[in-house]
Length: 553
Image (tube, rainbow, N blue to C red; front, side, top):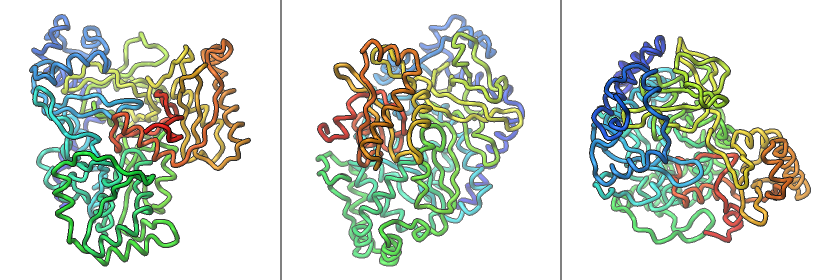
């Protein structure tokens, strides 16, 4: 079946490879498509002589840079049912952006935007199936997590969220892909993360020929495997007896709230009652021997792990791979809910620009008032902030991501994701950026780096930053680490000035248990979906001390 999928993906992959030779021409086609999608809309009416824009330079001169906040009024009008606000095409659904430090934002999805995603996803999947034929030998797992809220429609009748990961792929491929997914999309209808992971593991344990695991955040995979160790014997009993008993408590043993369950979830769980698999139950018990999980015992044909490996995610890769000894890891490209920036190729120095998908511009962070560069104008070694224009109605949208040019495939740049350009905390004028904090933590934390490490602000008298560490360091060394981080932060003028004025207190270290799991739980409480949650060195939201201490829920 995957061989047929490979054949169906080949034409798109060949067009993408050809476009890498002439990125300027490919991007001009993307811009023309974006402009056609916005013609005759409310958005276009706000731009003088929009219909006369033809070139990238004219586009930059006429259209201002946009942000999520600037678009919120238009998005609300679409949600109320108004047509032709951002695009001529109707909005099919809203997808919720992952967010980095707070609640998600709705992103309108049109047929044109889906087509642009597919111009990147099809070559990406083709690359994996062609270059790693072992992946074609069995089903794949693509991360599924609860939606975090009941699926609903806006007042204007537009659905919010998609139920199936295959919805992003070309429509003719969706039935094929759904049949080779090891875990059905209905698992994402689970009312809570813990039962979702349990049923996910039920499917995965039964999938003896699993060949690919694709997740976003590496810690998502770590937490999934932790759940397998936690629930392993219960899972084995369910497989042996033909029962399915999703847990009613969270990972800390606390009862889960009584949430209204989606009909699809109840139907799924009922339908799996009576399904026995004693052979896989015994394989699971063997894999659980010696207090750990042997993934090679469970899935001897597993050929590839796909996950984020750049920026803050790099620190979580080793932990995620600990149970998958010998399995190749492929870093993902930079893909946001709003659009695709890069996609991975096995022989490229970094993920390559998705040159056929959207229109991209690149701002020099040190010269924010300078005209942004185009894809074919970038320089190796330089860092840029990404602007995105799509057929979904985003025009010159400041995505907030920083990338560095690592090289080229033919004439198209390969871009390494460095982190968020807009992740800055500023309680009293200290202006701490995530990039700066990341460098400080890399330099000052002990090696190997603690399993969980994050700096976050706390309001108080005066306010201050807390360094949350999951570590067995002595209290004395923990305090010394916080002092070293404080000294390094004071090398920055704004932070040092705030400390000298007494506007900020010093950094204090806080020892935490189960950091990644507790971090995920609060991010979900803040409105994010488990599969979208990103590890961060700096979190802008206060309140973490109370959360980790268990004084808030």
